[in-house]
Every structure is written in C-alpha cells, then in structure tokens.
Length: 233
Length: 272
Image 1 (cartoon, one colour):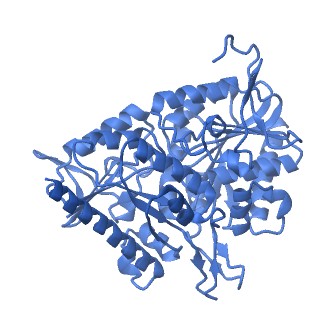
Image 2 (image 1 turned 90 degrees about the vertical axis):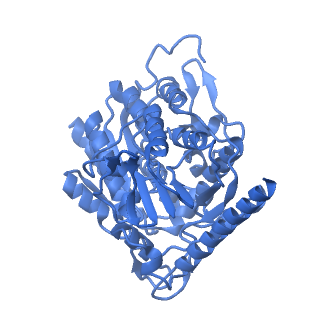
C-alpha cells in the first residue's frame, strides 16, 4: 500500500506523471481523500486543488508550510506501507517543514537525486549537509541522466559529463551509498508526459533495470531498518 | 550591514534588467544566464549577473570564480569580476559561504532580506545588461526580486523550459506569475531540445520536442529558439570556460547567439 505526497507546491508534476491530470480532491467526514491511481497507490498534490493548468501558486513560505501541514494532517491515507514524499529543489521552507512535521512519525530516510556533473553535485552536497543538520538519515544517492546510448549506432555519450568523478566519487568522499545510476532514455520523458508507467511501457530498457535495482535497494534498507527497530524494542 | 545607505541607487547605471525564470528545476536557467552574458559580452556589452538562487547558487562555478570573496566599498558590495577585462561581473550567495558545501537552510523571510540587499546594495556601476538568474518556482525569491526591481522597470523575463509536457506544465504557471506581477515576457527558450549523436549524427529527442514552441504560440509570446543538448556546452560550464568564444562550431552555439541577438534587437527597437 503506497502513498505519494507531492510537496512541490509551485511546480506540482506528480498528477501529470501519474495520469491523474484534471482529477479533484474529495472531502469526507474522515478528511481529504487521496486520488488513487490503483487501489494500492494513492496520490496527493496541490495540482489537484488547482482549477486550470495555468493557475500559478504564488505563495511565500508560511502559506506553503500551512498546506503541507494540511496534507499530512487532513488527508485520509489509511493504512500504508510506504509514504513517498516528492520535494522541490532546495533546502528551504518545504524541506524544513516536512522534516519538522514528520518528526513524531519516523522517517526512514531520504533518497537524493543528482545528475553526473559538478554543477549538480555541488548543490547535492548541500542537500546532504541539510540532511545531516536536521538528522535525516540518507538512504542513498541516485545518479540520474547517467549516459546516453544512441539508438542508432549504440555508442555512449556523456551528455552531462562527470568531470569530477560523478556521484560515485562524491558518495565515496561523503560516505553515503550510491543506490544506482539511471541512463537517459527518451521513453522515460514520453511515459511521464503521457502519465503512464515507464516500467510497464519499456520493461526491456536498461533504465528500467536500473530503476528496479535502485527500488530494491531502497526496500532492503527500509526492511533492515524496521528489523533493527523491532530488535531494539 | 552598512552605516548609511548609498546616495545614488546602485542600479542607476544599469541600462537593461532581465530575469531568467522557469517553473521547473534543472531546465538550464543558469546555463542560459551564463551563455547570454557571454554572448552579450562578445557583442561589446558590459554585463552583470545577479544570482538569487540562494539554496543552489550555480553561477560562480560556471565562471570558475567560486573561490572569490566579496569586498565592500563606499557604494556597497563590490561584485566579483570574471576576468581582468571587467566586462562581466557577478553577485551570488556562493561568494558569501564559508565553505562551498555549506547548506543555506533559510526560510522565506531570511531569503527575502538578502535578496533586498542584493538588489539595493551591490555597486554594479555602469552596465548594459543585468541578468537575474532565479531558482525554479513562483515563491519568496521571485516575489521579492520582482518587488525590489519594480522601481527600476525591468525589461522583462526569459522563460526556460525543456520540450516535455511535464516541464511546459510548470512553465505555464510561470507565465501566469509574469502576467500577475506585470513582468513582460521577452520570450520562451526550449532548452535540451534534441541531441545529435557525435558518432553517427543521428538526432534523438531525448526530452521530446516542440513543447516550448507550442507554449509560446499558445500563450502569444515570442519564441526565442530551441537549444540542443551539447556535451561541449556542459563541459564548458563544468570548467568555467567561455563556450561562446571557444566553441563557435558546437551544436548549441547558433541557437545561443541567436537568442542574444534577439534580446539586443529588442533593446534597439526600444530606444528607437
């Protein structure tokens, strides 16, 4: 049972990517109802609260924090195995708030995404430091857009070159796990734009194998964690 | 920070102010800001870049001046010059950090205060163009920057998107932001638009194609062009090199110089 919470208030991409554009949130006695992709996958996003694709959410920090609080307090998620929270880039209101509001619950950890170049890594190091500062465990780092194999000649190009050793070197230096590398695949963007599952649409893609391996490692981390917690009790 | 405010506005010598915006992260705003500055410099203009991305300041590194410090003078903070030419100057929180990996974990009000200072207290001197590079979104940084710049009548904003619908979907909201705040849209750039394989020259639309152009048409704003993915450009940014001067035959060069030319033409039309 999975819940996906989109706290990118200004740029909510999740509804489109899940094929739920145009859906609205319903309220009942037990709170806001998430929008379900499948019986076991529920989604919440500010995107569902906007009436037009042109509507902009031009809010300062406090108002964004208020909505994030509501998402956590008023959404009737039911019993879930995994709550996945998608965040905007940065180390600001949304990030501080979600960590603060979830502090009573238990956050297993954060998965941090980067691309291979130093321009990206330099920001990701800050994000890692943010996690340390707020005592958020780091499950690991994913290197996205990691190489492109030309469908015609099958040669590989490093479109975003890892001039300083990519995520691999950074993870070594900072003692965090590298969960995996996902190559560029035009089908990924296409599936997201159509709101379809890339993993189902392109099961043979090298990117699919990468995603699946990364997801497995995340699940293993969470299972281990749970086991350790129960041992402690 | 200062005992008395500067007598002459620090932006009084700046002829044109333009903002680079996007609803979406990672689409290439900082890349475009940098290349636009380089291209304008090559047309003989003096350019400044104000980097108001406080959480992820990319601009200093893109010019290989990330280790520079900011000094104060009577007129305020002295911007960092990219080279001895002094034709490109920068201001970014990147220069104010003790360590490069220090996270700026600030809520809105603190960000707003620094942005006000950046707009009011940097001694830019005489510039032809001040380019303001922003983080993605429509929040504190954007509201504060536009409010602080309003008295100086910015030229307008360039909006950057990648071709896919997921990116365009966010940039639509950025267009609404511009409308609501009275910021003129100079045009839309469709970045990462196609990749030509250096081995066999086959073009693959890795991030789809056409979304930016369609959005410009739909919204009735100018379309400034498609910039293809170009590993040479990525590498130049990594190494702090002047892509416009050093790689005129590279894939992204024509599109980038064309964007700069349209901006220049726009300002000439304004004065005539």
